[in-house]
Amino acid sequence: MRIFIAIQLNNYIKSHLNHMTKQLVPYFSKARYSHTENYHITLKFIGEVGRDEFNKIIEAVKAAAIEVEKFVIWTKGAGSFQKKNKHIFYCSTEDSVNLQKLYSILDRELKNTEVEFNDGKFTPHITLAREAVLLNEFPKIEFEKNEIEVNSISVMESTRVNGKLTYIPQFTAKLKG
Image 1 (cartoon, rainbow, N blue to C red):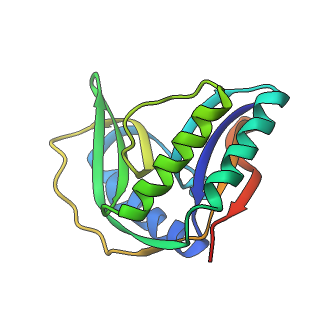
Image 2 (cartoon, one colour):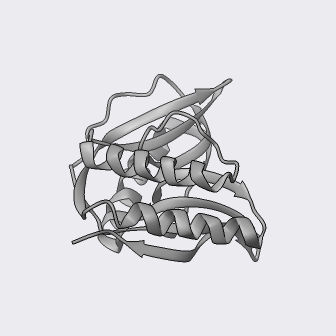
Image 3 (spheres, helix red, strand yellow):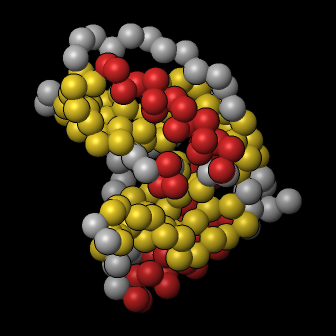
């Protein structure tokens, strides 16, 4: 099972992000757009795990969730990462002490499991398009800020259903409060 830990988004935010994505389309000669139902904020990418590792990850998620109170973050605007001549475009979030705290506690709890995971730099974002090729230089686009209520964290399975990339929640832990 291929998994990651994420903050799931409500339908209002997903609809707003879908609107943002449509504004980006004219700037790309090609791109793989994220499906609206797959929008999320990744906290940790784990990768392939067996049942024993999966159970340890669930315990780590539970332990992290009980230490952090519910909080709010805000969408900020569009940004990109570049790999070779292709881009990943995303919606960024404003800096959040609470989000960094959640990430740090989750990181600590996962390290206690001894399950291997991607331990790269945490840059909170919501991926809108992958493998995007720009037609011209990407302009600065401002988007309406939206509030994201962070009430829980989820262990998500990444799989293909009828050839379509699908993220399926396998476990969700509510935050305090």
